[in-house]
Image (cartoon, rainbow, N blue to C red):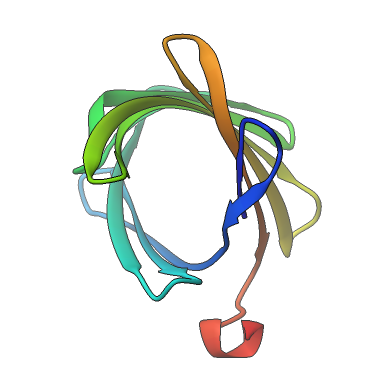
Length: 136
């Protein structure tokens, strides 16, 4: 779900994700977002590890390169993304935290800001090997 800066839910979605490794050491993450208003949004991340804990990533709507670090069950991923807001593209900063609960559950909390001011939050619960049809 997406919440605005006041905590009100403004949109809901289901996301299907498929990850795969390439022969050159990259990790591809394909995301399909099915928004409750009928919109379909697709994004493909290309992620490269620089060591055991740090990595970088790119996607078509990400400005520059995302930077991430993972320790224990927590992963933090920070980036700027172009987001459509009422027909205009806003450059929004994402502070994206993921917490692995067990082998099947991941909780994802994203704080969104513009010019250092909080503009919203996204909460996602990932469940391994569940398909969109099962989530309806």
